[in-house]
Length: 192
Image (cartoon, rainbow, N blue to C red; front, side, top):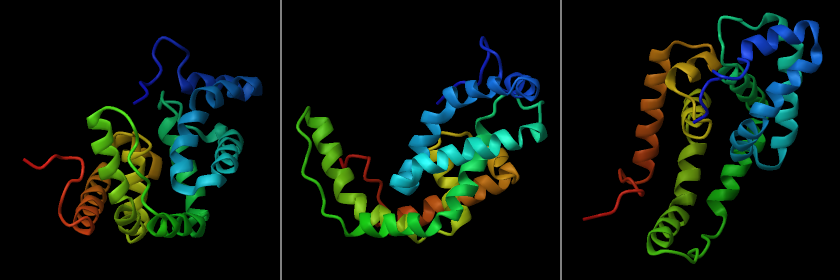
């Protein structure tokens, strides 16, 4: 998880400075574009680069409305990205359908633990993709912001503009549904 800026210039200060010096906004792109790309590419695949670029265009155009009390801009940027992903929902749903149909890859060579984990993850991929595609959009957004975006509950709430309690309930519901779809098992745990 990325630690909010402390020793370097905080995000809010960069955004405020960018109002007079637009070049300053580039530092936010440098800090967060790779993180956003990982999150969006997991959700949309090939469209990720375009969505990340669009995220920063939207952020730049709305920087004058940013709440400067919020030192860390990650939740704001993830919120914009999540809204843009929602526009690409059909592509995301098609990606999950393709993952569900895709053949299971063979084990990866390496230490025993990596091989066992790889086999378990590969075998679970179609069922996980089916479970994710069956979630309500708002539950999926919360789950993936926390799991893939590595945001805290509070950050996910800020990203989506909802209360933290709503994040908790949506996350709980999404986890329950995913667990049920996987046969009420946790594939990451070894059976004794």
